[in-house]
Image (cartoon, rainbow, N blue to C red; front, side):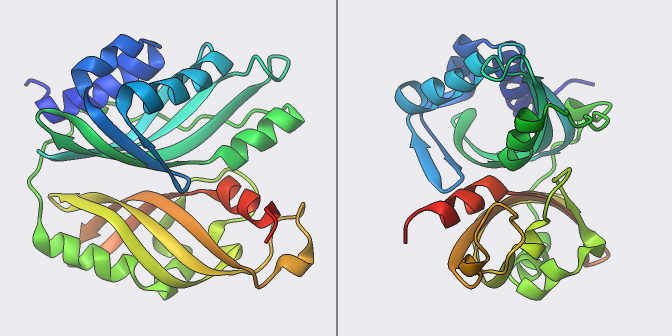
Length: 266
């Protein structure tokens, strides 16, 4: 059994580039016009924008590692759930771990566009208080997941679930990547959901969403008078469809971006 080209790209990103701290690896895995959407910001251009931004994080966490918990592999798109972890040289050697989900569109055999959200809210808490969260178990063979073709029926089922705000209030199918602190459903009354990107690979897939609504409280460091403010919360996640219905959602919410947006002058 050999690892397919899509899985090799994702492995190149997680292992060869990030865990090995090797910027030269991106030339083989990323298009020059690569663009990443994260926390409401578009980082466009591999060499001029993306690499400097990522290098700054690698400088702050010189031993940063990436642990991969799940992957979705398609011929033209890939995604993974992961945890980044390491020691920050800006916080007296304190450790932190923070989870996230990233998804990529492939073009010309390389990563061309990415969407991601990471739980920087959890990272900020750990670096402030000096208590490091536990890293969840890794996937035993993340790069050996089968490469499966897109499935229009699965995508329609997923879109129907993701676009309904009421589904996000039911935690029975939702595995939220947030170790402590308020869950995103406790922070925002969601009124409308925009699917920024979605792909499927067999009965699985990945998505990035922008949720508009009203802040309903939950951040202890914010003025309660901010309740009712209009907000946008961004989510990235993986989904599974079983027997014609969404059976599991793994999702990371940009809690820190939401928190900071409420601190900004209106």
